Length: 239
Image 1 (tube, rainbow, N blue to C red):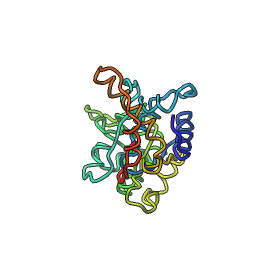
Image 2 (image 1 turned 135 degrees about the vertical axis):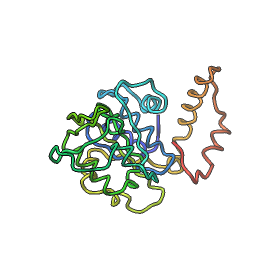
Image 3 (image 1 turned 135 degrees about the horizontal axis):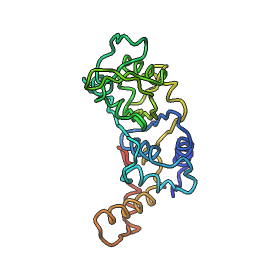
């Protein structure tokens, strides 16, 4: 499906991630499809040998609803991130060292599924450390509407992404405790300008998707159109 060597390496890393339940760190510029890949990993069956990358991409972009939850958390520029993620600030709760969250928190909504931390490097280090402790403890007190907390297992797959558009070592902005939880699989997604040989295949896939969505007869791109798209500078990026 794709020809570039860098994307082949990314595909291999994606397949390895699908086959396990370890944490995943997806690195790439804005527009490289980090969340699409995260959703594909979440939805793909553990035995994905019969699935092509094209199948996984379609599942990640607009696949059927998956029974396990996928909760995306935007970690950049959000003042109420702690309230949305945990439901309440960290406080002494009378239940030992195990943390407490609200039943309305995104972390609670992700139980039994996947939580995706978009631009995790922008999450305040204090919240990164708190999240790492919750994952480490593997259980959390959930404060229900009745006010009586209940102990719940933290059965969550953690997938995070780093925006590499700004350059520098973005990994250094992740606290060591959380970084260890994400070291299971690292996926590097190259920008489209660095894998121009993949553009014809991407155009074909997108045309199929668009035609199916609009319920119109299938279309193909001319060789001139493909040549023009391949020659564009692609100063931004694209998936």
